Length: 291
Picture 1 (cartoon, rainbow, N blue to C red):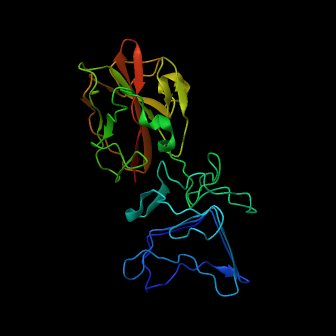
Picture 2: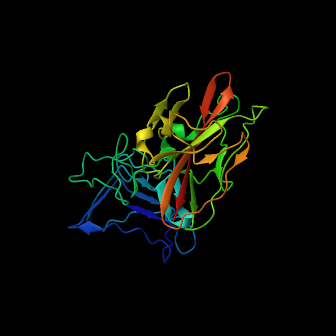
Picture 3: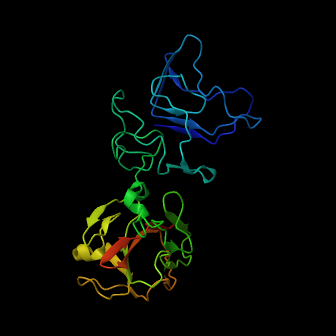
């Protein structure tokens, strides 16, 4: 469960060295990708074992590593932002659920961030387990589904976020939440924007009634006893099930007054709109990180 990525090696033909113990090199559930030599060319021999040594390589994603061992793949691991050093796995990564814990005694229960190591069906390759809400299908929402959608209408500072639907702002920076006009509807619509006082590592995918379907976390009116963890950020319809919105709102398109936070904080937002005819739909998820 190591990640070796975005390294520039100091010579030509130099390989990634795997630590050995008594001539035995063991590489499991790892990712080796995006490393180049001094000429800028991809490393062609990514794993080296000294003469007479033994290598055990399996269930890993290794650039130019096909044939090194069982279940070794060579595919873009889809890091979130490798140029910025963010080697978390984005949705659709081939390294998700591609590892194994069957041959490893005492595999760590947590990943590099301290989050639970096995989240879905199997351990992920690399240092980070895919744990963000963006990996849930519900994070895409259902607005306009089947009519060109779902549309990403919910934004923070004009952005729907990175591959993990995160908008990251420095402490004290102004943040503005907005909800656009659904392009498949001619008229403005009513909506409610719900919030979770937590980041994308907290997942509560919930099947919401009224035909809304799954959402990435339960709307505040479903569990009013969990305020302020769950809250209604803005709504055109006023209090819902005794949960009063923080900000009154007008119909779409709508933009909230800016706010800022001077300390590290994660906030998740997802809206529900009235598409008419008794049909309600969920928006895309946006996770706002002040750090």
